[in-house]
Length: 341
Image (cartoon, rainbow, N blue to C red; front, side, top):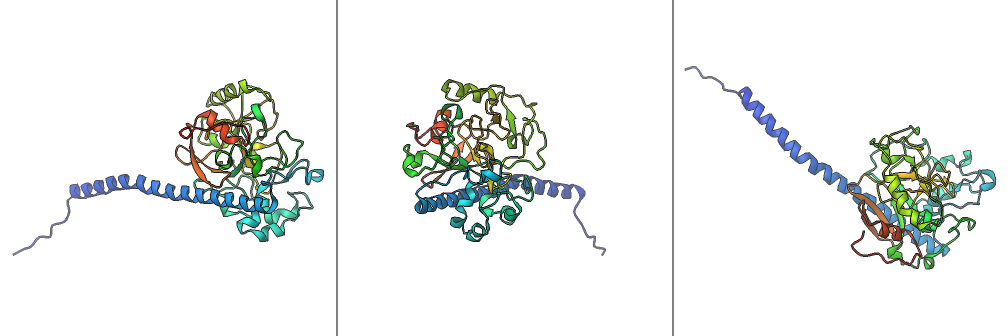
C-alpha cells in the first residue's frame, strides 16, 4: 500500500498569509499608539522635572529663572547671553556640568563647548522623531519657556522673561508676581526641533511645523484689536509660502538672545501647533516679542504644558484663543473657564 504525503495547497498558504497580514494591520496601530503613549508619558515626566527644578530654584533665589541673563556677557557676545537651562542644571542632577561652565567668557566660546555640546536627556521629548541636532554638535532641547501673551497686547508678560528690565516686561520676577495664580499661568511647553542646515521649506510640507514664516500683516505694540487679525493672517498663509528660518528652534540650549522668542521660548499668540510667524514690525529672523511662536509637538491633537504650580496639562490645538492668551500672562487679571483648555 502506497501512502501519499499531503502538504498545504497554494490557496491554503495564501489564505494563511492573508490572515497574518490582516492581524498585523490590526495590531500595528495599537502597538504604535502604545509606544506614543509611553513617549508622551516620558514627555510629561520631563516637564514635571523641569517644574520641580524651577521651584527649587525659586526656593534658593526668590525669583523665577530668567529666559536669558542679558546683559551679562553682552560686552563680548553681541547681545547673546546665558540661557535659562543653565540656571536649572544643579536641580536636574547636572551640578557637574554647571560647575564646568565658564560664565566669565562668551557663552559660545571654546571654553564652554564641553558643556554646550552635551545633550541632556531631560531636555528632549522622545516624540519629536528626529535624531539630528539643528546645529551640531551643540546640544539641543524641546522644552521652551513661556514668554507671555500676544506681544501686540502686552509684549513680555510670561514667566520665563529676560533679566534685563530695559525690555518691556523683563526683569527679575518671583512667584508673587503671578497674580493670576500659579495654576492659571503657564511655565513651560514643548516645540519640535529645527531642521539641520536650515533649508528653505514650504509651509504645507511635513517640515512646515518646524520652520518660521513671515506674516503678511505687520502689527505694532499695544494694539489689542490687531491680535486676532494677526493670528488669522498667519494661519491663512498658503501652503506654498517659503520659510524664513528653519533651524532656530532649540538650536542650542546654553545661550540665547533676549528678543528672540523662538530660540528657547514660546508665546501664547497662535494656538498650539499653528504656524510660527515673524512680525514684520519686529524685524527679527528668530521671531521677536511681537511675533507668534506657538508650541508644537508630534502628540496627536495638542501639546503638553507645565503650569507654574508644577502641574502638567494637555492643551488641544482647538483651545479657545482668549483662554490661551490668558494662560500665557502672569498678571492680566483674566479668568480662565474650566472647559476652555
